[in-house]
Length: 329
Image 1 (cartoon, rainbow, N blue to C red):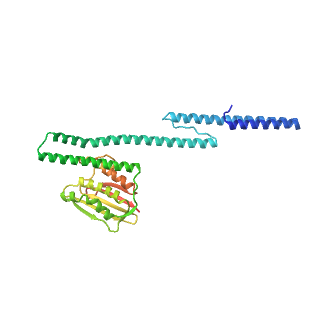
Image 2 (cartoon, rainbow, N blue to C red):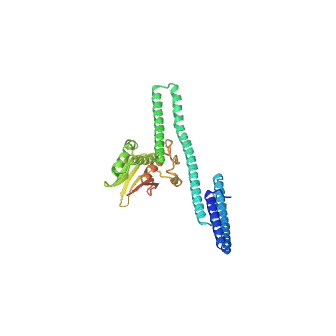
């Protein structure tokens, strides 16, 4: 009746043992033989009923697992009153829920990838369209002055696309977890000087004042190259939102528990509804300039958080936007 070899082997051994016991009992005394026969029959019936019940429970579990595998909406597996089967069912439920969570995560990741590719295509389409327009104008053979202006415009467009593609590659490397960050002590003052260096000329051209208050002993642990990249993206955001003649302030607070860098500008600040999405990839606020792609702050957050830091943003009590970058020891 049962396909399990162990059950058949046990049944054969039990039958042989019971037959020997009954035979021996009848040889010694008929009453002993009858008692042995009755005991063997009762034990065999109990074993048969127990085994049948267990196999029915196992068959039920198997059917429910099959239903879970082939019906996405089904997650229920009935509980058993027996010890071993109850433990088995509990582990199967945990495994099923875990697989379902992983499957949902993969679906979300697939949708996110599709949305990201669509966003990338959209972001690249704008400068490519502009570059195609410039090429069309160049075909008309304008004068040397106009030609030089159009070529400079095309160079700027290709520079935007290069920055966009480079930033996306950095984000993809961070998402894939293949970036290995160095862990070294960095002076905050030196780090900020490196980040600010590329903005000194634009600040001078737009008459933007830079104020810094950074203790000489302030240090953080991290990768100087990647962190300077993150801070540059914050400064770039401040530069895009501050007006000519404005001010950007950089303040560092070094305590026993943490080191915090605050970057504050006196621009218009953020709208309240923008704050929750400020670091989302490809998100551009209402006040964003046409040249923005919504990547810089997302890249900034990824770099900082993957090195154990935190970054938040808000509106300063005195007006303007403020970014908080904090590292704990």
